[in-house]
Length: 110
Image 1 (cartoon, rainbow, N blue to C red):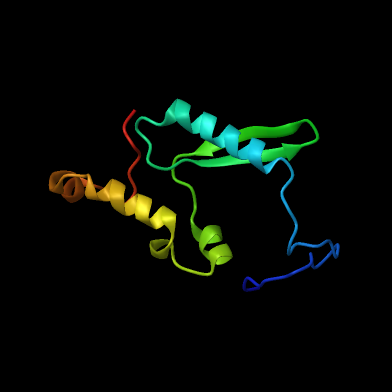
Image 2 (cartoon, helix red, strand yellow):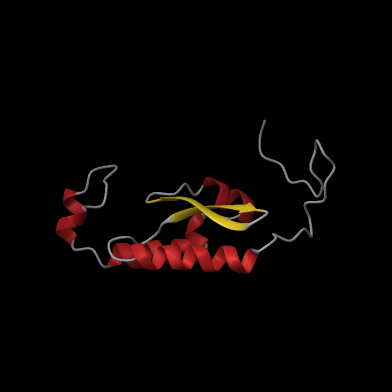
């Protein structure tokens, strides 16, 4: 089925619209602290953070996070988002030789 918007969860009836994420500030601080540890060599890291009764927990970081969900939630293409601007800035810093030699999918060197 195609994506659709709901103000309430279709199975449980729980409110979605207007709901707040518990411990959002702590989760954001955890993502920023994790990113600070891996900042060199990465432009973007998609952090998966679980919200538990004991607070936010870092699950994993993805060097090449998907953007489809972000685009669906925002209702606009990635190029029109702050993440798109970040990608454009990082790509603009690459030399033409790097662009010419890049494969379709390429891992960042470690």
